[in-house]
Length: 63
Image 1: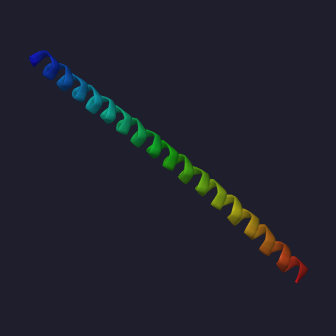
Image 2: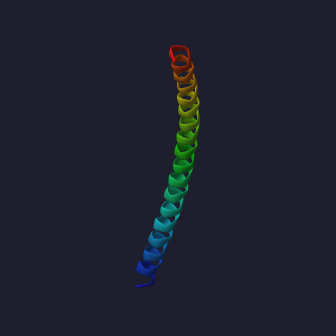
Image 3: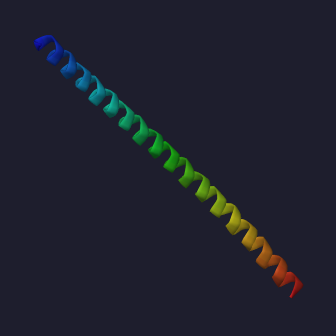
């Protein structure tokens, strides 16, 4: 009887540990992903701004 209880306790402990590790990894991945998205967004915005400037310049020359 006590053996079963100990086993169940260990099992729950392992599940909690695994859950914690999993959550930690998910948080890390999420953070990396967000960081990459921000970097990409910044680069993209920079390119869009450059293109916009070129476009304005062309319009001014044409106008």
